[in-house]
Amino acid sequence: MQQHHSDVIVIGGGIAGIVAAIELLSAGQRVTLLDRDGEENFGGLAKESFGGIFVVGSEEQRRAGLHDTPEQALQDWLAFGGFSQPGQPDSIEEVWPRRWAEAYVNECAAEVYRWLKARGLTFLPLPLWVERGESTRGNSAPRWHVVWGTGQGLMRQLIGHLRSHPQRKMLNIHFDRRVEQLIEEDGRIVGCHGITEDTRQVFEARADAVLVATGGINGSLKRVRSHWHADWRTPPPTILNGAHKYADGALHDAVQIVGGKLSHLDRMWNYAAGVHHWQPRKPEHGLSLVPPRSALWLNWRGQRMAPPLVTGFDTRELVTRICQQERQYSWQLLNRKIALKELAVSGAEFNPSIRNSSKLALLRDLLCGNRWLLKQMTAHCKDFVVAATLPELVGRMNALQGDDSVSLATLGDEAARYDAQIERGAPYDDEQLRRIALVRQWRGDRLRTCKFQKILDPSAGPLIAIREFIISRKSLGGIQTDLDSRVLDTRGEAIPGLYAAGEAAGFGGGGMNGLRGLEGTFLGGCIYGGRRAAKAIAR
Image: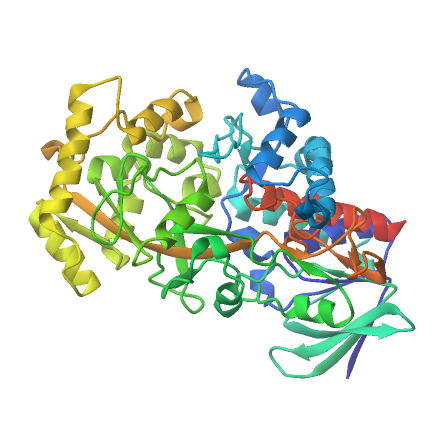
């Protein structure tokens, strides 16, 4: 049996675990970092992300003339997350999530934003305004700050800092280590054991403290289905996987076996516009589109849902509305002109201009459109269909699905009515057009949003239809922790020696976002939680 000994064991080589390891080394702790994946994937899902981080009171906000405060952000956060008022029955389960939310909004500028900038990270000049809220209040200011270099650049920098740390000799990193159980002795967690993924050899690691930073449960579609939220009716027949393949909840089980409490596992941040990856790296591998605002979002029959679905306001509501349909997938109808300006895929893989920190390439894409992305998606993704005419498009949509669900007359009427609204001009009766007018008031959104583009405009073709599925992404619930990231048992008492951070802890407290998440609290929550855990362990 392989044996590892140190002061602290960090389980998980994603962003929370890496940040915690950096801080632990700085505090003079000997660290063993165990990652289930191979070394080439060190950094986890964060390395594949777009790199957006929720920040309150940034330099970028101030330069854009925005005045934002933690008080304002907390009001938005608690409203969007659907937190209960103190004294209501559900508020007992939200004590630690609320405390984590309050701590994050008050400290994210110093503990996340300035901490990253001190390590050489920079951000795009304009923060983006997402999750503005629909029927529920959301962000009242742009707070989504995208790292220049995407998540890939973010993790490259952090991994570089870890490997070149002045106390690097006190760190041992072991890849292909699948932790299966925690070791408990005399009421204290003193280590873990498992097997190596490559050689199937048994190993054991012992330390004074163990930090679980292994992500959420959304990489296991079986768990996603078993914890499906009641608001979403039943799980769709097709759910794509946009989470890490090893975010399977195995360490959640291990924590629960030693008495740790899991909370709010039915609270997930899934997306409504998933398409199949044509080079899958895991079962049901999906890509999460940033749905074009100027496209018509249609149900499985080709009918617009009322009120119309528009991205950027309430991601959870999009999932809820689609899952309420008889068939739980959707279509978006657009044309080449809309796609060139608005089509995007979330993550580092399909944003090379930002990933490679190329200002010239980013300017080219903004001015000329994402021609290369549109070409890739239409050539390779089976969920994209293209045609010169509407009858031809409908025929290809039905052929793709294998039935005659989409009616040419229905789809033609929907597009014609929408185009007629644009033809008449403002003020608009159509809610989608009113929202487009709203988002275009912010410069960051105006750059990537068409100015009231008709669907059936002959000069804007060809026509494009995209079949979209629900895609699993992030866990909003998880292992319950206090503000020192100590894992709590079912009585609310800390389990000695056991800590959790990042998505494993629901980004803190077992669910600091509540029912909905203001985008950017995920990467930000992992950094913040990793730092808090390390400081508490070092104390």
